[in-house]
Image (cartoon, rainbow over all chains, first blue to last red; front, side):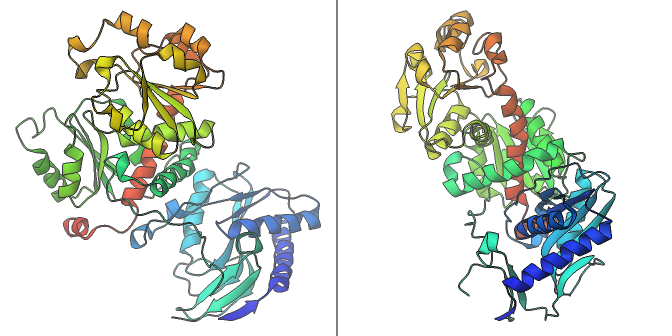
Length: 175
Length: 326
């Protein structure tokens, strides 16, 4: 196991991501941040707080579970459903999807379907804490905390205080 | 690794069929109800379907009359993007003498992924589940079981009170002929409720002492203490005349009307599985009472049936089903 990022690193990355999101969207006025459960949700909340610190307005935050939109349910066991709670109408807003790790891109593909089932946003952006590569679909993130080159068999584990009691990013070797 | 790397939700045992409430453990029930809660808002979305079961085929095999339950299962499957085929007794090979098993095997050979079975033969879904490799979902079998009704009843109650532990629930009416009563009693007890049955003596099953419930004939005596009053439908089609007094007398003795509404607690809840014989089990005043949850039960039924279909179908396909469909 390699610990690549600690709590200070994570905090710095989130501050920078918050600035990038505001800059990319030209302000915070039409933003809504949707975290993908489970760790995307607390990350989205922290980003929203940081954006509030920059812009004076905390954008609305929600959770978007994508399980029902996955294309690999028949390859996996029964999956639990996370909560979908979207506090505002996404129509004509800038939706920022927030996830901990970007890997194959399949979760994000499902998330795009899940968002469009709720309404038609003006634009959708993607912010991730870690991009570990190995995409299987033509998907990229707009805002990346850290690019971590990894081998396919390795596991990248993001832990967040709200879920795991600690902020850190570790890489576990291939079994 | 010491710290957990995944959410520490203990996964419930996978469902292979849903035939009777007694086949479920508490973790499976909690999981189905939690899934239903996440699925409920889909109906209110701009696009009211999810693609989860795209390409799966659900067969509604309804060998007994039912409009509402079939509609509910139909909508549940469609909201999950499954394809639905209907198979009814009239005009089918069943009326030509084909056995249920032969019919079901034909459906499997046609590539059906799940059978929803409604039948007047108690126990038929159990038999079918044993013999088929695809999931069987019991939509009501004779006097025996109606598990999705019990799940939607529990789901509806839990929307109004966070736990059922210790809740005092009365089931009133034709218990003898009621698969709803059998499923509800099992599920309410599993969730920790105290269940009392009140019925005309001729409409109580002879084995009721083994159900773990209290029985009484004194409806008006217990009514003011109850958290939930669950009124069963008078199953006219399942009984011969000798069981019962005329319906006017039934309403006076066992129905819920203005006087009994007044003696119920203000925060009590009133339920009925539908369809209601208006003026018999429930008066018009009862149906309009804010404590009456009949419409919520209907709405919630779709989400609960979606949860059952999701848990039975969204996962690796069985080898048998794959062989047939490839």
